[in-house]
Length: 209
Ligand SMILES: [Cu+2]
Image 1 (cartoon, protein in one colour):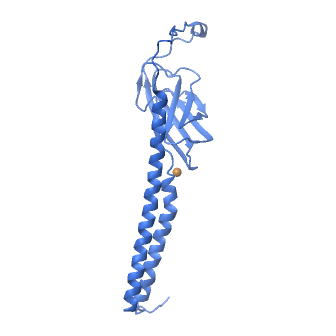
Image 2: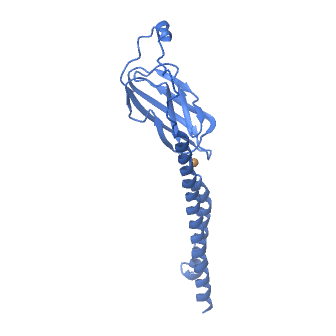
């Protein structure tokens, strides 16, 4: 192609700016919803990453920033020697995915690999590990099941727990955090539209002058 290099620069440039701005708006408009509905994050786990426990937990609970979709969630719990203690679907609850361990974890490092589908449809995954100090009691299943349970005899004197209050507070925080993100995205779009409006008006005036 041998287009004349001496082509007037002004018309080319005047088309370039609106195109770039239109592109920017397009990206912002497309980007805003996905930023507002950012995929969920793992907030914490129980046991926590790096935790050092005396004995094996019975369950492993992952807490997310939103409730994951119940679409093929996956968890794999691997003992230090490579034995897979659990592999399958964790139970999805309110902001959580919970693995109920089929047996006590051996002493050493336990690794948890997980994968869930975020509320926005994106799969998210991760891995964490914790330590268990004590090996489970020798597997004598008969004596294990016959183990006496030391339940507290009376709960009549127990003080009322403020747990319901605590959980409602945390869910409120999550909601306001999300709407703040939506607000920021909307403000960003408005700012860009105003800037484009000013640029268009200024350019129009200059051309008429
Ligand atoms: Cu996402």
